[in-house]
Length: 398
Ligand code: PMP
Ligand code: GLN
Image 1 (cartoon, rainbow, N blue to C red):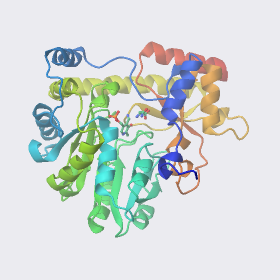
Image 2 (cartoon, rainbow, N blue to C red; image 1 turned 180 degrees about the horizontal axis):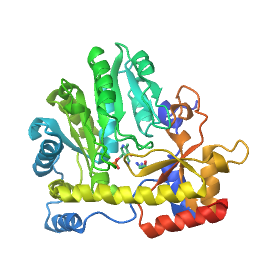
Image 3 (cartoon, rainbow, N blue to C red; image 1 turned 180 degrees about the vertical axis):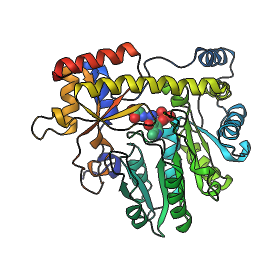
């Protein structure tokens, strides 16, 4: 019998860099500053609501679009933080994490032959899901160290086949928060070419130093062509829960909910109930979370700088980018360096090349020459201090 191929897109991909580095960290008892997750669980009151709802039930299929309570809470959250007027019945959809939201959006909005514009460095699931939809991806690489938007290049990447632009702001792994002028430039292109912008805003509440997160959806004329994605994982330090939420104009919410009904159909009811409770928490909760994260960024960033890493600016997220040129052995690439420090120093990080389209199957472009790695700082002070001490001992500086 002749071999029959399995799916040609997925066959090209291996295990994600996050799983790979977490497994290596476990194998070598390294402190895991690779995969992004807090080492302390989110608020006890939110977890208590989930626990009670689990025992009280019902524990059967909730409505595919999400329980009314959570959809109403998402609409209220949009109004409270961004002044958006959202109809919870036609414009809100609950998903099993932002990952499912991204997948459902790309599968629902793209046809073979369409083009999708992605910004590099890019989060790992965008390209494979765009490829599965049959669309062609074009990457536009932001320029370090401040991850500047190359406007002429972006304009050249957009054309009338451009159906979707994926915008991740605040951005993983760079920690960049797009400012209003940048957002307006992208919005103008989306309007010119009649494109939809999928806005991955999972780090919306984790901005530092007064940086303001502006949802693209709030820009004039953009509410009808933006899909906004949030995640309880990031807003409540509960990454294992995988509860995401989409806000979109009714026509887009409708087609995305069709993708969602065939992907997961729904999401655990007790977790939805608890996230609805969480979204209604007072402002002090959200500002407190950002302040705590900013302090962790400073603690790790300062420690790494003293050791001799060149630290890039970071306005948001869980992540700080470091240039490891001072420590590279010969032409050592970022993956080799991350593996070396995991095994030999006992601290895991993630290589930036994992976020480059050129390193992904079917990806185009050339691998950037910079030597950047990503450290995750959403950890307890004692853990960050121990990581700094281990790196200092191993790298012999500071
Ligand atoms: N988008 C970005 C930019 C992320 O960093 C992550 C992961 N944390 C996700 C989406 C996925 O979020 P979730 O865990 O809710 O699926
Ligand atoms: N978003 C997390 C990160 O960037 C990883 C999530 C995952 O492992 N899929 O580290």
